[in-house]
Length: 289
Ligand code: COA
Image (cartoon, rainbow, N blue to C red; front, top):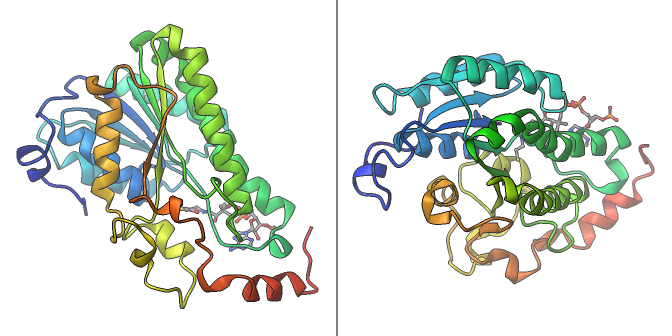
């Protein structure tokens, strides 16, 4: 089921056909956040390729999104692991064969789970860094020729948890810090070619897989920790995405759009975990390599 509908165009801030004749390539496009980013672009005229590991989930998401706009072309390409650049090269070829080109890239594929340092194996750390950081690099690498040709734009889906120390998230924090650094370097390096690179850093977005995975049981009501006193919505992320790909952002590159209601400025997000639960976990004799 899609999250957005036609009222997004009729009553929203954006004009219809804003992205007519544009094509977006989205890794992780079947996940909650990247799917709604794709929905917004498709509602506003774009065609899309949704890329993922799970064939059925990816194809189902694409079919769902395609229903949003008559004439929309949305293809789902499964069995793609962003850790494998050749998988991505194949997906890029299929996208260009079927949709003609690629203008926009969303590097959104990510892996996450809560794990303290003691229980985080080298393999687990490597899995997350490889999906989030190497996978983002591979995605842009595979799309580079198209981005050059079409003076395209990139959005990396980042996070805010590396702005300070978040326990149980050392793997993701390290990976997302790398994603921000990658985006900044690409903004500078690819700017002369007319390619823009920005990040979106979602905070606590209601109804996402990330929230379900990462909210420790027994946490305080989360919105009390957000200056704007509400959780984010997937529509908040859709709006930032549309802005960053729109001509309104033609002079915007090398930035991070933080969509978190101001939450990271509050600092302490460890809630009632700190330090008791952490000490318990780290005292556990099972220390994995
Ligand atoms: N706590 C600690 N370690 C964990 C873990 C957890 N909750 N989940 C996985 N791992 C470890 C595994 O045990 C393994 O390490 P080990 O063999 O040393 O024990 C390592 O991570 C790799 O796991 P594996 O399942 O082989 O990797 P994968 O490449 O198939 O999966 C993950 C990648 C681990 C990131 C998996 O969580 C995933 O596929 N997630 C996809 C969706 C997702 O995370 N979305 C998040 C949106 S915020």
